[in-house]
Image (cartoon, rainbow over all chains, first blue to last red; front, side, top):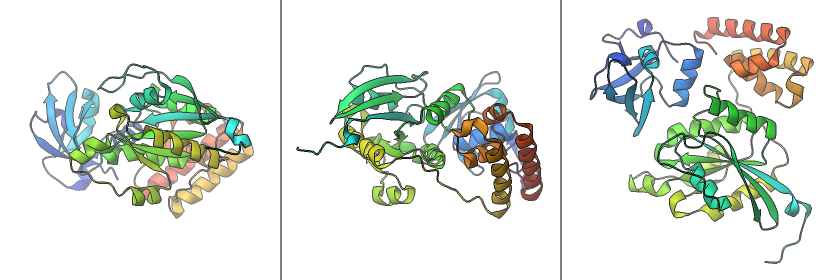
Length: 84
Length: 254
């Protein structure tokens, strides 16, 4: 379900941590372990899920809007979430 | 209303409230118990479990408010607390409070509760806001699909609270035991699960108070809490081997 970014063959894939506020992106894959993948699933973040980045400062957490609710993701987490 | 007093009329019923953060558990808890626990319009207000006792039509109800969680996977301390309360105190019925405006994410926990086998009632909370957003529910169909009663509620207006309590008491009285729902994971995973389950049963792990199949599923998922508590090398070896085989076969960790 959570393929590696290389396997999906899509270009322009970046970690969520590099997306600027206001941009709309789609989740491609989770480059983390079993624990992080289970967590993302529980939060409703699946491959294909659309999200808008609300806030992203280079030194803090990333705030996104998914299906109408705001989610705050830690910096480390956001670096493992691949989007395009 | 005249009612024949049966044994179940006097028994104490333990009701636990679960749900995603900020879905309205404490608001409903306060209505059910008449307490004034602090509520807030942001997640994480309840950080420990709170209990209240209520007399309801001859039943002594013990109502437990639990911290908000997204899943039963023990990622956070709140999730660990909730799971342990559910597994070790075995409430007679669990009310899962759903935020109706975010039903997809909220139903994930509901399905996990079903898999655990807890007697369940769903409170479709914030149903007024969902309606205002144009979200409509086919409650009959949803209830039939999930096999649980669903009661629409509006926590802050007290709507549906009486119906919710009645549904919870009915489920608690009708259900004698926890009945685990067996989700079929497909042949490859089922074969491995059977292997693990056999060893779990032979070793008599966790005092037999946890369902052996459920423990096997958690071992296969690499659930750290269960792995630490199982502490039987034979079981862990079997489940690790199974996990490796499945990862090779399916490409993803189980």
